[in-house]
Image (cartoon, rainbow, N blue to C red; front, top):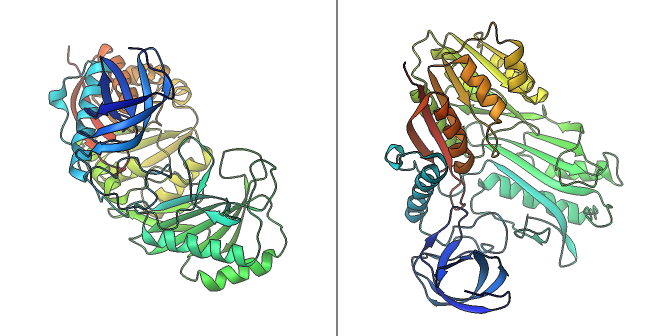
Length: 451
């Protein structure tokens, strides 16, 4: 079928894609429609057309399907959520099916070993707010960008954020407006305030606010900071981060702690962790504990095993397992994360964990003669593991591999390679770490095939 941009189509939405878009067929030709629900009959305008598929936006809902009223007034405008128009139980079913389909199609993994997704807290779950600052209707504002743009949407009460994050960000914006603090302009690369970043722990009731500014010294700085001290008294620590570069990277290299220790403390289970502005930390506390418990279950530790934790970040997974392991070895390319991991081990009195900075395949090749591990934990970014890293893991020859993934497609690819190298995929447990978005995490157990 020939479809052209600008053309209007009447479509019936059959299902939801792995990216969270509605899927419709027109004479066998696929059309993806954002913010559509299964069963919707819609009129939509084509915005782009390729040989095998097109994308279209809804101009009219002729007959609603399985949709609900979104909680958030900015839904569909900001780029934060794309599934709020679906009932949470339907979101869970879609994500489970997405994992099954992706693993089967790319990795040849049987859907029978994929468990139903574990739900988490559906609303007010995010412990970190990261809001760009700009101009909206003539005044300074903070919020989120529209999808695939840098057009600012002034979200002041995000429905998936923990409420202290929203409240602190709103007050910072109010004070910045009162003080005429200039917002950063992405086109001219001028202005002062670039981002407001807020972290909160519901368990310790501590909040860390980080203001990303183009320069640490700016007009009326002390008056601005003094007024903030009066207005956000519940903030445990305030940090200024300097980022003068014309870049999409949020944080710069220089920081000043204005008050407090420059970090907060959070907990997972019985363990404490220091969280600074630069620390990687999972944003869904309920989901994090479910993932870590599943990792512990899959690791099957008896107290005699050596655990190799690759992409260990601040060491949280390895430290969570340390009381049931003989030794934990963490590897991470980010030196500051490794320092956090060592600090967290000291904070919790854990002496059987060591952490190494460097690319995992390099560290492993240098220590190959001495390196043994009974269990390997993999927790890579969305791009998955490098093939060279997986080959290095196979050389170590662990009995079990526990793979924590935030991308079913790269997970499937990596499982296929490990299967070809002598490992069986035994169980896959999806976890809904990001309700109301199309993202899904998986914890996978692989075991070495016996000769």
